[in-house]
Image (cartoon, rainbow, N blue to C red; front, side, top):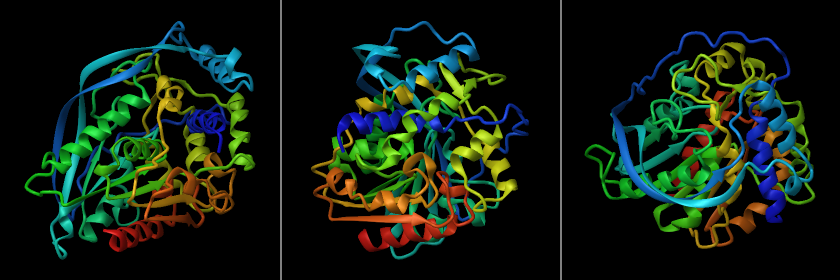
Length: 393
């Protein structure tokens, strides 16, 4: 895959998660809050890590209203990006300390020492750490609980800008910052931090969508930190796969909007247009139920506009990573695969991204869309992840 095609695909992917096709805004309902998995011994952490990154500079005027958002999305979808919307120009080195909220859990019931293997889970755009630890029907939709039941420890966190983590300007919140923070957190866990009295013997990164991109970036920059890699909500289309091209034009029908009635967010953050936009992006009929969709929407989060525009600055080519990789995507993931991820995996681009990996295992989740954790076959996804980890660690 050529880098230009792949970068455009990244941008289109992030945009498409905030599509809106129906101009009705049902309320999200009450926030269900945060709950620890019942089978874990859990501790919450407030992490402060200093990083130095080379950030891109936002040079356009701030978005003033939803008309600006509509035009920005139309401009971004232009087939001539070099002459179109270019709000990021130039770079600046920034050293700053950021505050991240996370949760570590180790199983109440130990299973052969597996609790020393720590999974570090990074959610994608549109959610916070509750994507991994649903309080709604946790026996069906809670990956953290499933991992604990299987004997693994898990650290999951709110990415910068959402949930209980620090909120910074959406014009400054960039992918390179998020990747650097994940690298720092992973390194710290290797060194015994943020894991209570557990000393990690091995670390596996688990990501969803944008979280998979960040996890991939860590394996590119610091392959020594990662013993196994689980990428959900992620695939690699090749240059002839329609999935690599169609998303470029679809942002013109999106109707993301500025965050409203949410304390602490500026105009650099956008939100789902409505619950139907959320369902369109993450789910596929009949592979979800409406009650689950309503819960998922109730915990959804905004995203910083510079996050996805800066994604192309990340290096995802992990030539030196020698661990194993599980690539998991929903069968009907329109965002990644144009509605058929089995066909996309057959293109084999993942073998070029991880040429030194000991194993690359593609998995297509039956009946699911982009948000596999909230599909009716979520347990099949979890079972596949755990079996992969059991065989590789």
